[in-house]
Length: 101
Image (cartoon, rainbow, N blue to C red; front, side, top):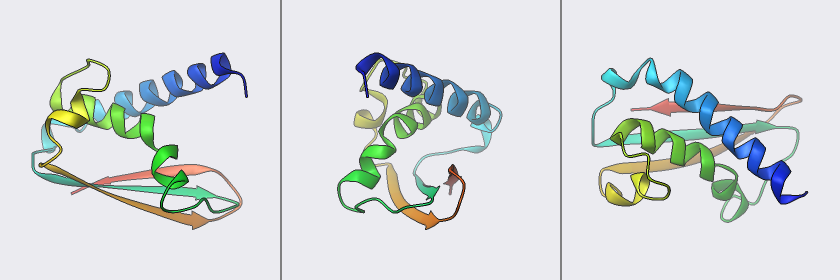
């Protein structure tokens, strides 16, 4: 897919996550565990492709939690305080689930 199409999708993903997560921002404290679940008709390779499919989602989550919106910095600064678990479920429709503990 063309890079501009990917870029638009990634920006849209980040905006949607930030919008919904900002509502719950005050309830989130560090350290925390973020569980990201991909629901889709097919599975991805769990060691390489699954974590990469959540890259922009995880960036958006870390930006909201830390308040640091500099590209690539939010998840790097607090790597000792955030654990990430990746899961996937096979189903007919596409969706993601975000749980923060």
